[in-house]
Image 1 (tube, helix red, strand yellow):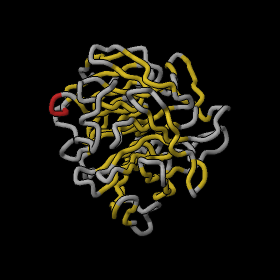
Image 2: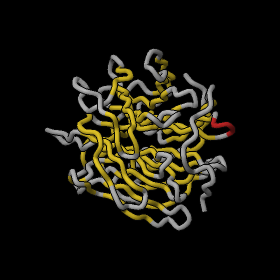
Image 3: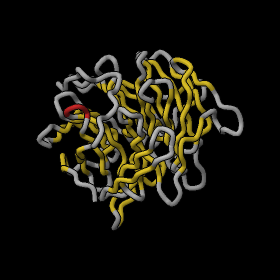
Image 4: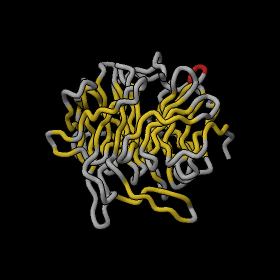
Length: 311
């Protein structure tokens, strides 16, 4: 099993880690319905109560934290732990929220687009122009499920447009090191897709038989699911992997695949922080932990957040 350091425990289905410059982290707690700060010494402090189901987070150009809130899920608990189990009865819609880290003030930026209500936003990434791409996984119900999408939105709340449709439970999302390609993970298919970016909110669509304009990087066999992801400086795609539990590292062209096992079947997300971005902060959701792994390569720097401070 992979060596790691336990940073924080007692988190309620953590997701969406965001490394801060001072060595601390933000995480969302999906079952706890909150945005939470984790200090370097493991002290856990609530930042904001969000309700619904906060699922992913990123720092924007204004220093605020932007959150994908899926609107709420039911949780099932048994001898294996706690895990999501479909749409919550109180669900109305998903939403994109902006949180002021100084005050904890929460603002809903988007809950619908020209394509209709946002169903279940999952993860997001900011580009160099100050806008952000985000996945909408769709909701799963007892007898049916939504098809998913990828959207592009402006950080000021003025525009949000569906760009990619349909996808099968799109989840993790990132930009390539040169920011010319968008990388998207599909959960239940365990596939990684690449989309050529033509400009802010625009892609160059591959023709049929591509189902949505993307190019397949890799699709893994066996019963495993892809969750969120982060890239290293070489462009390797590090995907939090469910069921088999761990991080799957995929080379940029998909030709090399390595699995790094972790002791949690719901290893949900990771980010890079620390000196030279060589620490992987990973959320282990069933066991409610944030852990740190010494990574052999530096993570890819994100476009914003290098000067953000928490309160």
